Length: 456
Ligand code: ARG
Image 1 (cartoon, rainbow, N blue to C red):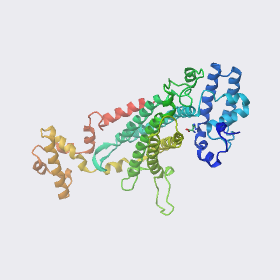
Image 2 (cartoon, helix red, strand yellow; image 1 turned 60 degrees about the vertical axis):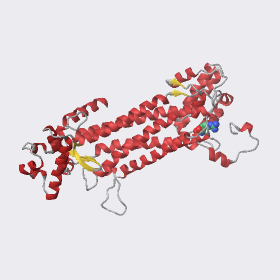
Image 3 (cartoon, rainbow, N blue to C red; image 1 turned 90 degrees about the horizontal axis):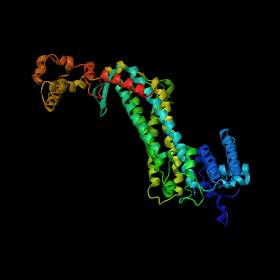
Image 4 (cartoon, rainbow, N blue to C red; image 1 turned 45 degrees about the horizontal axis):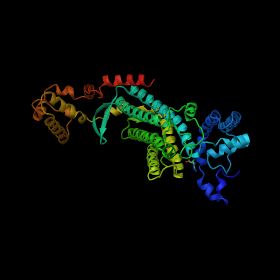
């Protein structure tokens, strides 16, 4: 069979050109969406009298057969199939003959590819949102399991204050919730029917786009034909949401990588999720987590690629847009894969509460000492200076703050009295962090049960 557009051509197009422009390798994964869209299109053409009822039925039956071939992996692609749309149409004319040739009426591959992408995205967004929820559940379960272990919180990767380990796991649960929200928001703009705008200006044939939207389950219908075939921000948004998600997963991976070093020893990764070294017999490497970190980098790059693709494109459709798929598919694949494997790793993480607490420097309590002074009426800026001097004194004398006698305390500030000793312990420190959003066990416990309900 000749190319669907061959009519205008006098000579043969170079086979190199056909190879170069083909997108089949990438868009064949849209096959089932393409068929779904075509079945609905055929129904609409019949309903509107653009094809006869019999022709419409024949086309639909042929498409169902192709669907089965694809599902059973029996569909034979041919070298002359330029993309998934031509592959399906070519096979349809083999099955349904002349009737098949009527399918590509009142549509263009320009609106067809947008339809396929939108149908695909609706599923992908649901799948990835489900994956996020799965990981959130694992994080909340871990938060519950490690309650009420205390560990150092870090800023600048220097110890800052004592924190509940549960609070840490819940921090990532929050980040993931926003990722889910971003996807849900993007979904609204994906859920719009593009079909019926044809190449870029609409059609003179009496199509019924509303009927089509109903058949395909779209909530809205695109309003401008040029915009419909030219724009890809509907794809950029979920891809962007997933690239941000990958950044969050990468940061979590990085934390676990650090925690699993022998220097930290806060967690032990399960052997079954690590790999070894070909030369260093003692090694157990967190390669999965490192790859998530690496894939966050490529996702960010692919997102930048998608954005660059759109910049400077004149309206409306341009073939550059074909490149959107390999970039976006890459981002979605990395996101789904990383979520899945992390949801398996998190429950298998052995948190070593004793090591985490042992790592705490007593100077992480310096702010508690400063707030003690504030409660006695000293301005915070002064209290900060007083406690800083106390820390410096201890470091210079190689003394523990717990070992300071009352005379020494009073030398920093007369406001210090015996009860300062009660303030200076890790449990008391976290217990005191009862401001909303803080790490007090009471608040964290409430958060755990709120999440449990929210993620049901
Ligand atoms: N493979 C193309 C894409 O992904 C489909 C649309 C092609 N349209 C065209 N006029 N060549 O964008």
